[in-house]
Image (cartoon, rainbow, N blue to C red; front, side, top):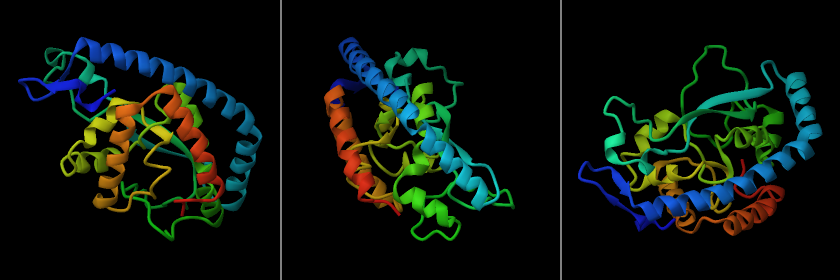
Length: 238
């Protein structure tokens, strides 16, 4: 949907026109169908590989095979009139959800789960974890998030709540990303590296807004196809 399809209401919250809402529903419905089909097929085809990865994680390091973390998802509030947004409702920027990944780091025995960006040569990453990250195999469990409706295969990367809260005040247009479901891959992900600073996020947001303006089934298919060489040749991976 074009970025200019909504206008600011007197309350300051963007207020969509009926045509903008109808267009969003049509586009989102078609994209959602494609993403469910791709995620379902991916789960079936990748099931043996995922079982092997889970077993290897358990054999090579202590801790669970899967890692879970809270992320910020789709924000549907912009589709409602301003009067429908109760003042007591907490504004997280989107609906929080639990993301699933294969564990690539050693378990922190101190219980400190600070929300920080990924780091190059992070000492917490296990040897197996480095291989999984290079080929993005640690993200395979997110196919389950797609089937649950938390994510799509294609969309902006979901951010951690604390980091999201900081970035929304530092980068204009950052919250616009939440008007589509977050994705495992996306226009920003296949063009840029992992986030390491506010400036790198600023660049990714520009790509995310480009995607938001031209989102469609064909665009999602194009990004899925372009993701393959990114994964195979380890572009942008650590």
